Length: 403
Image (tube, rainbow, N blue to C red; front, top):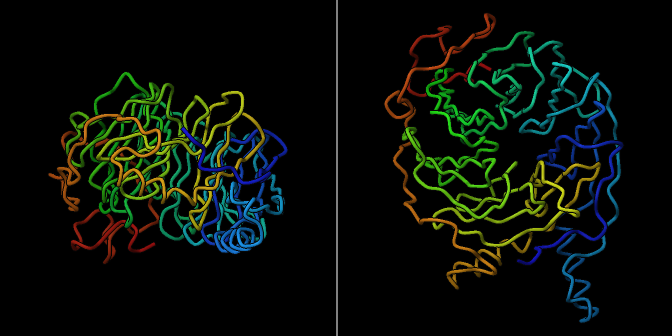
């Protein structure tokens, strides 16, 4: 396989080992949560507009520079270092507007930090075990999952969790949602995934336990497919509404798939414990190529996509954020579609159907298949329009409507 490209000399060297990272959704910033509890904010000085302009100038002035499409860039700059956690910051995420950074720690606390680095909201002892995963919800809300399998929904206007789900018997490794936050899926180290009906604010189904840890999860194929990365390296594919067993699988990763990100409805990127970031096609299922590789076979712990989709950031077992130029991803995909195989592609499983078995309905029949998991609800939030906390509401009414 061939690297899509590492930006020239562009990496962030944090003060200690990095647990998590996230790109700002509107600006060229990346946040990192460190093992010593520090949260660092870096400006990476790299954008599609700058790269396109520089590349055009470079190619017109010298034909010898055509071997490298990535122009030199100013090194990343650390702009903030925040120390509001007593132990490691294991999870963080910007909200969808980029006005707040949510953080979670092994000291059991969660916090919200504004654009100036001030903590505007904090809950100590938010969980009973260390927090392992944070994902943003609609404005002012976020989700946190801990090492004991508990998922909580937070509204930063309140001091108590809006919802609490006891979903798994081991750590929650990842959380994914559809675009309008009516559906959610959690993956866990106990080998299960759990299905959430966020329109009704309840857990619907936890699958049977696999021997393989479920380490990462994504919605794909217009929300009709759920893809999970596992400890063995196989990607499991579930059809929405059919939770008794997986409907497809993609082998090809020699070690565990710790992290994934969605590039489009048909393509995802994976970060594996063998240190390689790969490009994977879904239906047809193929390993299309690789983005890059960390030195010394360090495992990839997390990958994230920049606001303009030109960069992937990755972290491993060190203090460095590496940036990978993926502007040529479009060419890689186009070449694969025209040739039927792409560059260094490997057939990784059956083709399957794009349509899936689920519709876009969130009815009980569509989402269920078993008893729901116990849920604790906060007392200070309205879950439905019209003041009904657990009532029916209209078809369009949802848990987040009043937030």
